Image (cartoon, rainbow, N blue to C red; front, side, top):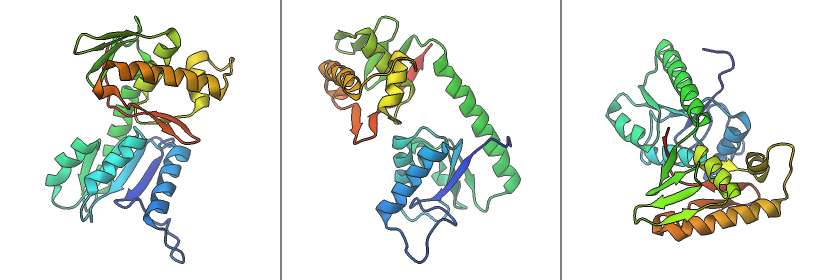
Length: 234
């Protein structure tokens, strides 16, 4: 594997093997906070999620990771790998049965990293349209189209913001990152200016219909998150 590959390993309860403080065990909320803080700081290429001893709610752990990050998830299943389909449906990239063969694990990690690199490169191409929540967004025209024939026109700034959200769904976007997406690195913007554009986009999304009422979530003191799966047309 490339030496630059970064991997985070966690269990179903988001505990990290070798990372527990046995003198002061972490509660559920603290474990989750530590895990997601690690995801943000380490920016791993793959999360290896050990569900080999899962006793319920395993797919929920995958969904929770997917709602915070688009990082690929490799699931380690129990000997009965029939659950792999449910895990892939929840958002896992691949599954491997335990006990894990190190060579097979290494090969699968390489495949995931290569595949994710190709997927990540796709948004860099010009997208003809983004589809989400029953809506089609045409970035070249800055138009939102709903199935009920409703059309909403966006300003250039709103269009750039929605394009940024659509290429980074489920991930928390800080105001600094949003400012760079809107204006570039050489033109800083105040938090207030960013909030105004976000709220204008929210209002226009809500005007489309019920399916788009709450797509932009505010993450207190951290920024915003676009909560919808996206399909891209090129």
